[in-house]
Amino acid sequence: MLRGLYTGAAGMVVQQERLDAMANNLANVDTTGYKRDTPIQKAFPELLIRRMSDDGVTQLPLRSFPFGSYDVAPVVGKIGTGVETNEFFTVFSQGGLRQTDNAFDIALDGRGFFVVETPYGERYTRNGSFLIGPEGLLVTKEGYPVLGEQGHIRLKLNNFIVDEDGVVFENDRFADDPRRLVSMRENEWDDTVEVDRLRIVDMRNTRYIRKQGSSFWNTTEESGPAVTMETGRPKVRQGFLEGSNVNAITEMVGLIEVNRAYEANQKSIQAHDQMVGRLINEAIKL
Image 1 (cartoon, rainbow, N blue to C red):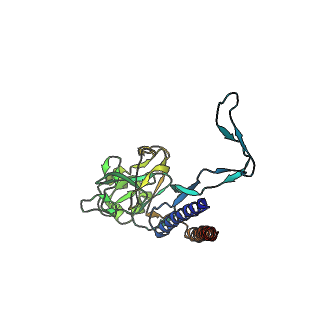
Image 2: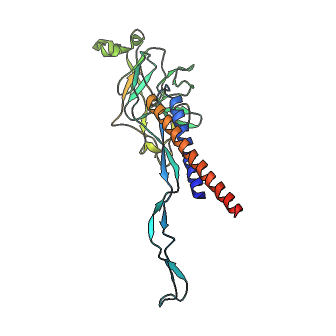
Image 3: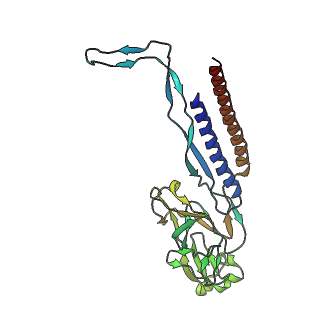
């Protein structure tokens, strides 16, 4: 009977962790480049149930064993012992692209991450909302430099353009219309300078990279190191931002489901508590 109390309590803990994950997803529904988390549960080992009314104990000695006994009571089924949260799995599906027409907004259409230099080492992000820092570097909102394949990317205000491969071009003509690169005539390319190419990386197993706040990720031993992508690079979209991949309606429905499951486990504990109390009271009367 006490096993039922522990099973119900374990279920309540799991539902609480699911609730926390869904609430965090909803809180970041408008966060650029956010990837939703999904908790994964696993069951505790099941126990075999044997029929106790049968005389299933055989006494020893036998020829090969001089003493003891063994149980041959028939197995009638199994009983579960609850669940636990195994891991929080991040879903890396593509978020929707939102057009901003801001030259400093850059989105990745496909697999990969931008590389950012922080005081704690390189970090990786899908949040392409950038700006020009005081030193003329392309930086994140937090002021951390965005890295190209040759290092820091130094630009002037509104005089650059980024093509679909992530190559950054600089030309004063772009200040009037950043999209002019597409329509430039051959003789207008004389003043155009290739600054660098955005460093875009990927990991062997992105499932195990770790969130570190502010839309940053860090590699782990299980994910493998970040490797600059040479083939299979995502398309770089200047003037766009990638939204989160959170579906608010799905998360709200999940919250209702979690609430009902939590209440069911709670009532299970209350029922077991009442039965234990009744058993103790009846035993006292006897």
